[in-house]
Structure formats: C-alpha cells, structure tokens
Image (cartoon, rainbow, N blue to C red; front, side):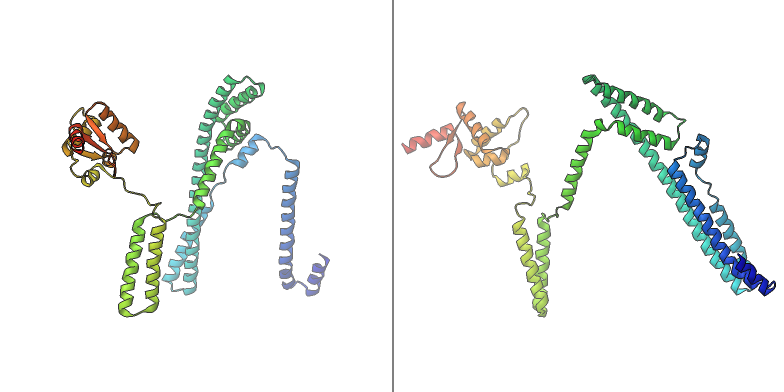
Length: 364
C-alpha cells in the first residue's frame, strides 16, 4: 500500500512501522485464502465434477495418524526439559516443562480414544452390512415366491436388477462405501416386498410406546403391608414422644396404605392352589392313586370312604368346573354305582346307592 510505503519513508528505516504492517498483511492473506476455498467448494457443488476412479480412491483412503507420534515426541522433550530444570534448579523452566507434559499426555489420551471410536464405528458398519446381506437373501427368496404366483413384467425386471446388484454387493473387489451405495439402491427396488414387515414393526413400536406411557400401578400386597407396618411404628413412637406433625403423617400413611390395598385388591395376583393345599383343606380325601387309575376310580373310592361328597369339594379336589362335576356325577349314576342326591337346602351331594336307598326308606 502507498500509505505503508509513506510511513517507511518518514521513519527512515525504523522497525516500528514494520510491526504495524505484519497483522494487516496476515489478516488480508487469510481472508483471501478463505474466500478462495469457499469459491472452490461452491464451484464443485454447482458443477458436480466427476473425478477419476484413481483420485476417488485416494480421497476415500483415511489420513495417516501422524498426530500421535508428534504428541509422543513433545511429551519426551517436555520430560527432558523438566528433568534438566530440576537438576539446575530453574523454577520457571520446570513449571513450563510440567505444563507441557500435562498437555501432551491429555492430547495423547484424546487421540487414542478417537482411534478406538473409529474402530468401533467400522465394526458397527461391517455388522450392519452383514445384516443387510442376510436381509437381501430373504428378499430374493420372497421375490422368487411372488414371481412364481404372479407373472408380471415389472416384478420380473426388478427381480433381475436385484439379482445383479446382489451379485455386485457380495463380490470382494468392491470397496465398503460402494457396497453401501449398492445396498441403498437395492432397498429402493425392494420396498414393495417390505411393506408388510414395516407395518407390523410400526404397530409393535406403537404398542410398546403406549405401554411405556401408561403409569405402572403397585399390584403387590406386600408393599401395602410394609407401608401399614411402618406407619403403625411411626404412630406408636410419635404417640410416646408426643410429636403432633409426625403423628398426623403416620396416620395419613396408614390410611393411604389401607385405601390402596382396598382399591387394588382385585388386580393383585392370586396364589394358585396346589394339590397338597387342597388335600389339607378337604379332610378325609387323601387317596393314593394306583397305576392305570382314572379320576372316576378315585372319585368312587372317595365316596365309598366318606359316604357322601359335595359338588364344591369335587371341584376343588379335581380342579374342574361345576358343569363337568355334574356330568361326572351323572355318568356314575347312569352306571348304577353312585347316586346324586338333591336336598331341599344346601348343595347337591354324591352318595353310595345303598345309603341313599336306606335313607329314602326311613323317610317313607
């Protein structure tokens, strides 16, 4: 600039104007290079230049990680500086060395973590590609079935394209990114096959979201028992030590536990009665089952031992409905083995025929 030249002429070779010129020139040069880079990017985007395959391969190759070696060298240099400063009792240089050691160690660790992340990403991408290949195999099988059922020209064309792209995708000389691009094209072709799967997946996802959105209710009785017990302890201790606020809180907690138990009593899971529990509840109904013995044989033995059994007891012991119990009684009565007795009050009973006949005679 003429202004800068004038300043130099006035000061007659002094260094101060040169120092003023340095930041200006740096800013101008930086802005020029920044604009040039933006212009190049825009032209590439607009023109969509197609590069040669050799250049593309060179661009796609990952850059060498020389940064790690530089940081390691810097770490050793800073360590040497720190040791020398400690030997010669130089405080400032020792502090500088310590700071440089810490910075270099942080940078080395960060670079190592980046490398591990990149490896993980590559592994994930490879796994995805393997999954994609397996999905494509299933899609081809589906296409075979579909073409066998319906002879349509569009479908057959798409199937041929699919086979060709699938062969390219599995071939070894292709690079990873090219395989990914081929797979994206295959996905576009195979949308008509995947429609049913996508709908089902969407429905399942919606159902899961709805279930997750619903608030979970406490349906275990043990929770309410513990709450009630804790509230009782609080009430007792507060009553002894005469603390009004905690006493009110304890009573409110007790009431809440009772109310919650009352409301969720129906929804709580009930214990299934085992055979042992049924035998304990119904007295005189413990009979050993021999080989090749049916439920009718066991029922007949029970009636003979006890003399009479109610229908509710038969339901509990064998774990059957009321209708099925009545059917069993009718079958045994039809074979003239037992008799079903209907009293004026209470449940119907299954009795032995002799006892039933004797009672009927006494009544007469």
